[in-house]
Length: 112
Length: 112
Image (tube, rainbow over all chains, first blue to last red; front, side, top):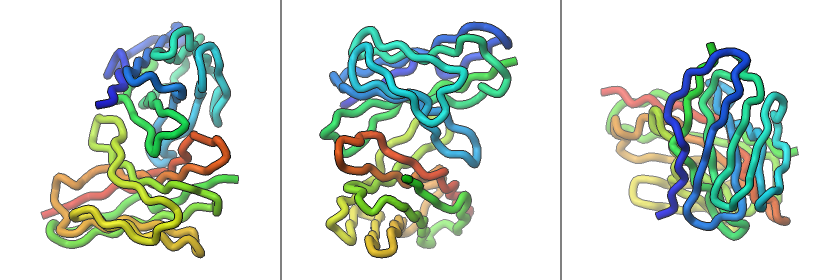
């Protein structure tokens, strides 16, 4: 089975901290995605990557950056966390030929 | 641009059928999906339909696609309390766009 693993289920960070959210997939997928999920807003794409060291902005990239140094790992970075970044963060991966995206279990981040 | 819309809530009685509706705007969509998200978890693919089909049935699930009206529905027969979750409609377009576009999600509440 495809497995997408996010390093933390729950995180609490302070305003201004630098935050790293890690995601690892074990199926050699080219494409990886970071979404945030907020009530009533659904899933909004933050960044995606279609290859190692390649990244593209999604719909809401402001306040975030990403890193993809290895094919299996895609990191989301909050350079200076703010309270409006309190959310559920979901990582996903797929290949160009896949009919579906595979999701991690989510990281619920609270910024205080 | 691409947009996927669905109602936010649906409440049904256990044993009844549930119908979750979705409309989309991209007429070139090749795949249309239903994902399920249980509380505190990531999304899991429930079922999908290819755009040249108009119906797909899988046990208690029936997907109907009206391509002319760009309308997708998911019917769950004999709804159980374990079906309580958020259901996301998603589409994927051709031409190398491997990023699925999600609706805001419909919260299905099943009560006894």
